Image (cartoon, rainbow, N blue to C red; front, side):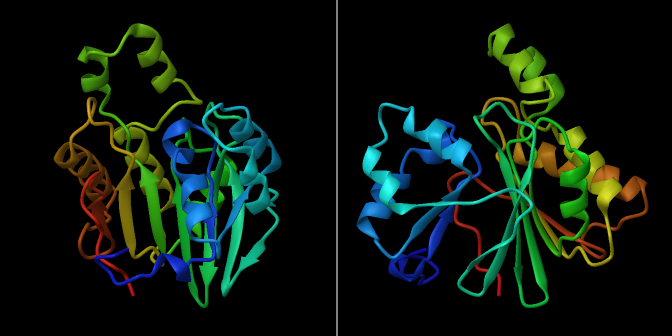
Length: 226
């Protein structure tokens, strides 16, 4: 935000996808410091958050309950949460409409359900998970139980699954795709990008011409999109 000259005080809210630690760890400190914001998530996700010992109960002061498939307004944005299969207490993707543009976030999902398909097909801009390469996961250092958790239908999307979902949901209104939540141990940015690009090209979708595809890097800020 600093690099793009965005003041934290100008933000109106945080939309929380689910209650896993890597998604909620800094939510309360951020909300407490910048009191202009609210926390938007389902009641089940919020209750899961409260069960964690490292989250202050005072976060209740900022919570605004949302309900899946029921749009809500944040400033000039209309936001709709939709169900995704993951192993948190309650898991959401988000479809966000501003004017004529639709932005969809679909991360931390073990498979692409019919409802996720529906919202992805509406997107002009899509952030989607490409978490792991199947071969790297299988031969990598994770214990078997964790490998099985990642691969099951409530874990994470592989590069291959992500590519298939993009090919199945592609419309000519989709302008830009960002690949997110890449595993540090079980994926590589160039591998994810190549898998997605090759699959799309095989189905006649020209990457760079019909749609732009980029990888979101863990430690580098993304350029601001106007």
